[in-house]
Image (cartoon, rainbow, N blue to C red):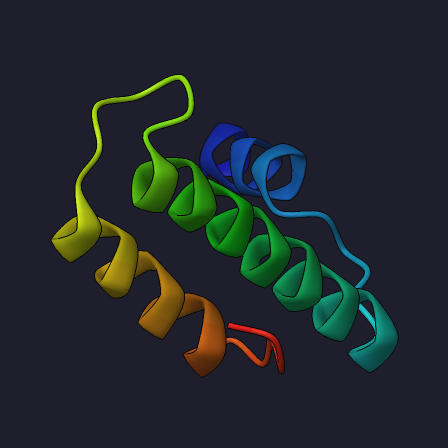
Length: 68
């Protein structure tokens, strides 16, 4: 039982992420998805796939990217 508790403590940090850290993580993910969508939209480094680009833009917008 003790070893399981120790394992959980090492896997899950004891401090909770602040609201700013969470918001920053969502913003980074949204920006990444928008950049990935742009690549698929124009076929830059990947095969051109407008449908996949649209899905990525929508997910980016859901995460809060105002430009998506």
